[in-house]
Length: 222
Image 1: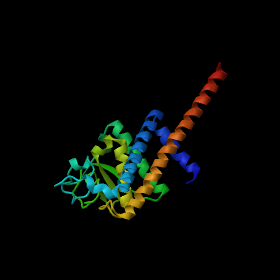
Image 2: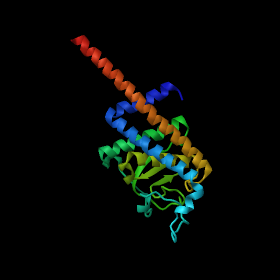
Image 3: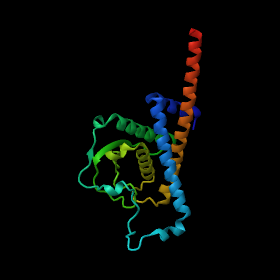
Image 4: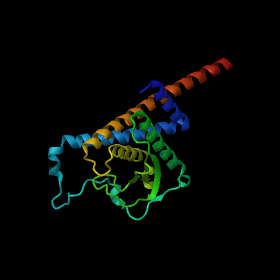
């Protein structure tokens, strides 16, 4: 990717948010995503011993589901959330998710979808998707609806968005074990992690330049 494009994208993000808030968001997002990939890799390395930890009598016929997802049920009609009704902190999280969606569409050509929030999601057939109760995708309009509660955590929200975009790219929302999805998921994850890292570095450089310039201006005035 062209260095100028990267820098312009980072500068857009830096000047949209305050430096402290921006760096906090990037760190949380980066740590959540990298932590998730570490867990996946560890699980893959110990896959031969996975059944050792099964509880006798438990039902393992259903696919893994995220802890938060297990608390929700998809039923009834789709109820979009008015973005103007969410809190300022939730709005910042939401806008960062929109930015990541557009960033990935421009860099690795993930589908250019519209990201919206919903207070209720309709039933779906995403049976083997670990986030099956957290999102709903409208294929015709290319609109990705994410459960409103997910924006309470910037890391969880971005991870969910990345996960969904990988599924949408491979046209399979049902199965997390699909090799095509896994390949795309890792690719998207690599770009987002690299983006977060480069953003922190860029922010540090810009802040350093700002401080250096400010000191020299003050020295001249004195």
